[in-house]
Image (cartoon, rainbow, N blue to C red; front, side, top):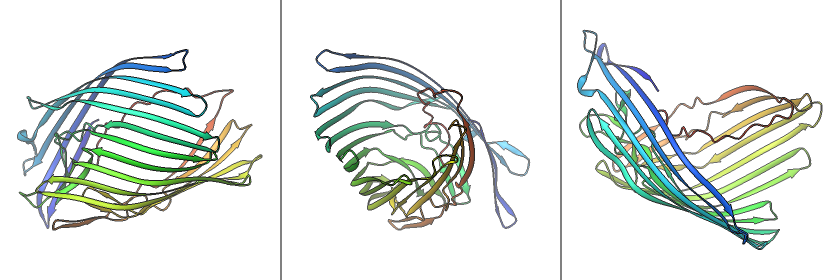
Length: 405
């Protein structure tokens, strides 16, 4: 992942900063896993296994400044570091159907994770911990018209490799993005109670608790007039709420699904660069997915029209305004449904970014607008040869690759 940046800051006719930044990151990963499943005559099913992994991330960052005699490297800012990660986990899962009314699945995974970090020859340990991940699904069928389900899950999310690298990327004269080598992964624990009516309508209540949740937050530098954007761990994030999912059809022409949800968000951090915050917000979401069958045969035309609206949210010290999104796709199938031509437009109104991002916290006030340039129109053509079926492959997890802005 190579990168190059040129930054020039001018005040009137005077050049304040003329800087070039070279960066490069190489990531190597390897994993070995063994899984086994067994079903007993009593109806119990057992699934267990072990997994081991190793990752090496090498990062090089060089800053060059032009002070009138060409660009010269700032050796005191040179970063040449390496992050090594070692992980191992073992899991056990059991499941059973108790008659035609009740079924249960429960699992427990234990994970060991260690990360060593070496920066310019200085070695330190980023993370070294054990974590338990319980998961369970209980389902009770009163009758085919009434089904109750309880889901409990847990997971872990790691920051990207760039986010734990101490790279400084200027945005403008007063703002900079900074990496955080002390950033920790966060755990998440979720629970859902679901009621399904007539195998069609869904009512649910949910709760998510996320200790050490991280997000990119700004703070004022105490030594200079500069706004620093950096990923920070919070004490926790807590969300709970209710929702309803209602599908419906209007003849053969209109097939739709409506989702409504309301929730309370809460994020807390006691020590945030000489400040603290404990922000709460009630928010709602409306989502609607529609498929219109314009013609069933010769031509076979379908129109997808999807959209959602979110009243707002909080992210650390940010108070995020409302956002909405409308996307559509026109699909034409022909040649005995072997060929498909798709015209698609995402983010039609360029509105899927928060309307405003405002901070009014402990005497710190700012308002941020971001240019939404993610609208995209695509045309694609698909041809199916014979009875071809796409093979299922486990997707490569690239969530920790690349830079966050």
